[in-house]
Length: 478
Ligand code: ADP
Image (cartoon, rainbow, N blue to C red):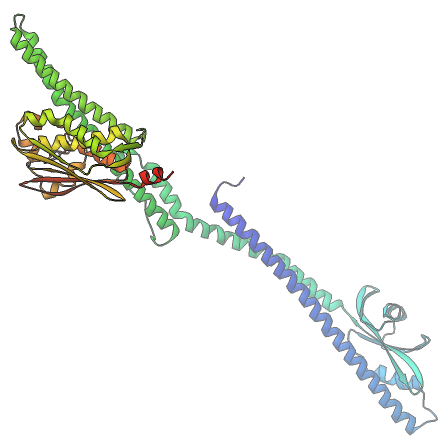
């Protein structure tokens, strides 16, 4: 089997062209044969007409001038003898096939022509002796006598011409095909050269040099477009590789701090045999806190990894967001009390929704946790909601430290934490890892919804969660 596209294209090209050229040559040849035959027939017909007219005229003239010596045979012989042309034979027979006169001395030729000239008075092509002849009978009447005029033309020179034409075609058609094949091969090679260049470059691209791009050439043609699309794919791959690398680096960085604390604390606790129970308890409490933080980071990482791999099975079911939010508020109440922050819940009486109970709990706890963590002691968090036929909208408003305008989108990135949050030394604030909001956004997206920062400034931030309700409608209509 032919494996190269270039050769395949050339073979197809030559095959199609061969079909066209051979049919064209064949048709041309047949047409030439036809035209030559028609012209020959026309000339023979014309000559026959001239001869019979000449004989009739001579007959009239001579029969009037000297009726005593006059004979039809003489008149015919006279006219026939005067009409000698190269390659042409004219012979006159009486109705009972007696030879009256002929331009050919060869009797064999004459009988051959007589035998082959059609009694239906149509032109025939007949072999006589070594040559082919075009021959036809024309009956005519001279006085009261009936005669047959046989007109014939040797086809020898026409056969020679046709043989030459055939030879030319037999040589020129293969030569033309060979040349067009060669041309086709070079054209295919030229037009596929960008593919060769692209595959050469693509072969050198791997994870280490994803920044490389394929040569685009003419970006308006098909190959240019293919290269551009491939380059876009490379860009996406490069971005996701970079994201992956950053994620790994950030994850190890986040894990390093609590691990270092755990290690440091345990080393201090173990360094002396006679540590006081109080000191040991203190160290253990720190180790406990840090391991809790580690557990949270690892859990979050695990959630994101499963989400990225598409393995997180979202379990949809009918829930009431008002109840779910009340539960979340109860869950964060301890932390709020600890920081002296008031939680205020103002929701419509019922907010039915079709979603994953556990994931939505996680989303709102993350937001409430942040609203408390990044708040000032004595601050306030208001959870308000509204619902219409298509959407459930929940707003979480805090009176906290706020987020700079330039960081509003960045805080949804993995491991991103604002400088404002980092610079604060309170334990609750430093405990974050920067994964909560990216998980929350993923959860909202799983519900075809969004999380946005509606406003943020010195007086605090407002986070809006918008969750479309279509699925619930579909299900409840059943
Ligand atoms: P974490 O809270 O664990 O650090 P998140 O992804 O939940 O991670 O939040 C990312 C960052 O966004 C936080 O570190 C903080 O800088 C900022 N942030 C989130 N919520 C608020 C808020 N309500 N007020 C001010 N800053 C916030």
